[in-house]
Picture 1 (cartoon, rainbow, N blue to C red):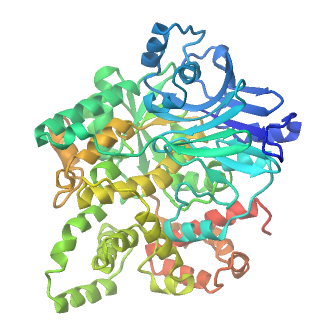
Picture 2 (picture 1 turned 120 degrees about the vertical axis):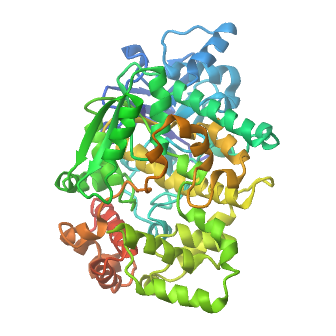
Picture 3 (picture 1 turned 60 degrees about the vertical axis):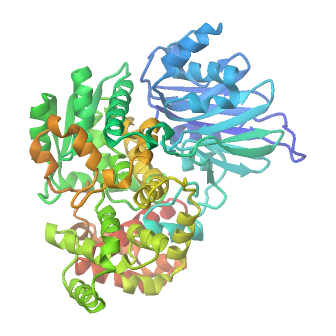
Length: 628
């Protein structure tokens, strides 16, 4: 797990030009921007066309021979990630006459590319982004994994192409970029910028499951992976589907235990991480870690401790004190996140990653299960949508009016349920894609905010959802999950995990996000995943006998912070900066938006708090780029 940077020089005529040497200051800044991702070693390589830089976090084969960029015959590679089946591929290549000098997955990628070329990525099981330079063909390949777990940015600049693992890495090789109007609109609609867009129009992401080939100055983008259901599972019985899914999850966990450094497992109070910890602990003794919050509304540490006792793991409870988290906010916004990002749960995740790094360098997590198997409460809304239409109109109006008069927020379990009910009622009668957009958006029901922002963000979101290719053999519930996989999972959840964990040089592996598990989930009917009263039905059915019974009846909690309370208390001044008239006008926003947001936060309205936090992330990012 690492970070890399590079610059390819292109001639104005379209051919490659000599002299790709960068100023030492640019190379130093680029490598420094990824130092936290790879604190163990540094390497550089260049010829007359390209410069490559790399920072390494050593996970397997800790010998210095694994330092990158790595040169093998005509190929030079800079790689970020982990290939779980690299030893299997290595044996296949040995049978074909290849020899190896390291036990790194990096060398296997280079050798595999020499054998299979652009057919290699589909053979790789893991998380990865890499830049590969073919010296003979004078061709650069930028490749990103199936779900975009690892980031990869690029920017055309003054006859060249800059690329790297972070947005600010690309800036270091070129110049500071400015937040685009579209990016700000996405942030105020979703809290994040959906793949493949970035914070600036001129900086791009290689989309998940794609590669970018640059030869003779001409870029060619190719999609090498689309999430599709496993055909072999579509027509078998539910019981055989369950057994196959269990086998795949067990295999995925086992593969992710490869490590030459200490490895542990996140453990919350839910079933996702408990499943991963249980399967991992069967293979090797493993330490588990739980984050305990001061606020009992968000605290799952006692439930997690009971699960750890049931499994027999060596368990650690990390206390997420509010004052300690507050001290991390500047680091979160200015260094960890890289781009503006409004998901406030990134703060406790950064805190936990920092604490966990004291014990381990690799951690397994249960992330992805909610999106693959329908764990969020909004999926229950899809079950209810048809029934809602059967309720007489007068009763629907009465219920809608009653709910909107009640307190809604996340400060208590009851107000949180009322918040969710209000969002459901407000969006349930919309057409399919519009309903999905309404339920996933940041503040669709906050009329005071929407009057000042306008409908542009919602319209763009509906359009984005409409561009997602949907296989013909998916039911409506699984289509909803696929849309969230392609948006929320890739651009929110995985961004949060990668940026916060790698800022502390902690590698997080998510067994549920193995592509074979993903494809199996798409082949399983939606009603096997989403049931009345709870989601992830199939996971509950498969693993119920092996986990504590109370785990399956526990209230679902998010990994969150008391946002309203903090923004109206210790973070009041930081919020005021981010919603000041001067800053809003600087971003072409209505200056009245700040008053609306502050007023809503005082009333305990959660969309207003999320909007305020998102603007705080924008403020810090733009302040570092010239706003005064």
